[in-house]
Length: 167
Image 1 (cartoon, rainbow, N blue to C red):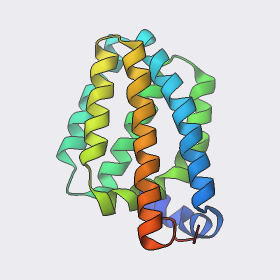
Image 2: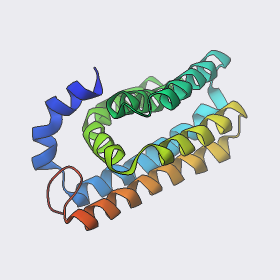
Image 3: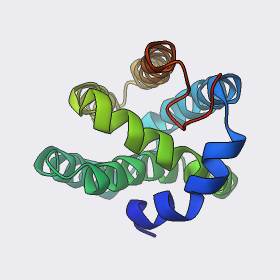
Image 4: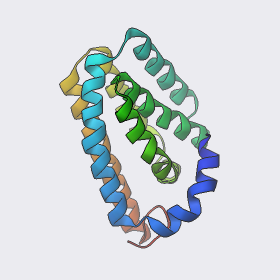
């Protein structure tokens, strides 16, 4: 499912159901879950999975002018990291919230650009490639904390959450 379809499909629910506090909870959950996921991914990723992550990251770098495509590839990167854990339950959990976060990621990216995303994805890719599980965990936690800070900054600047509801 393409992000532009996701945004169109989930926009009404997102606009009316996710406020700033709920987005903070989503980012907090992602920080806990995805940092643990990154730690396991660095230990268990196959060489082919690392190559997929590398190809995905290169696509992200080429798609910086098309935010919808960039966000689609960004979400795919996180899904690939999840696949590196070799854990089907982790994949199911990630898939269960991916659609919820897509509109917010797109909106945030449209406002702040792709620099932070490229930075953290590059660092995470390097940690997984180097099989440095502690670094992978730390990078992902910092990535999610940075996303939350960006979200809060946008919310306070605009007087509302990036999804559109006052927080």
